[in-house]
Image (cartoon, rainbow, N blue to C red; front, side, top):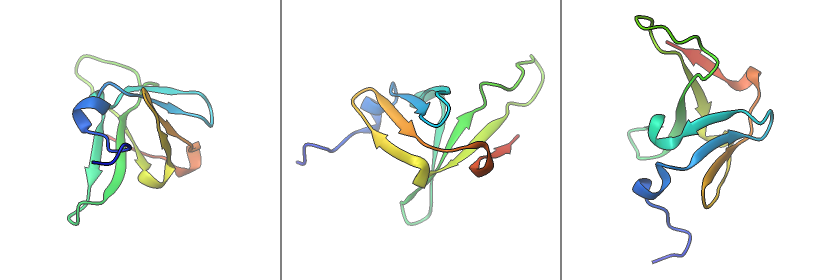
Length: 90
């Protein structure tokens, strides 16, 4: 087995941080990963921490292309993206 192999059950507690602006997006377990039909990682689907929380409103999410993931460390997932590259969805 390779030393750099990571399992999702270990990574679900990793905090996601955008190094471009320092914004934190909670941990991977509170967000989603989109995988295409070939098994390739396509997007991180992050809960928008800036969106207003209302009891009956729909959640807002941010699509982050997998290319923006720069490093998966021992406790964090580092992304590097700016507002122009992000797609916000409901």
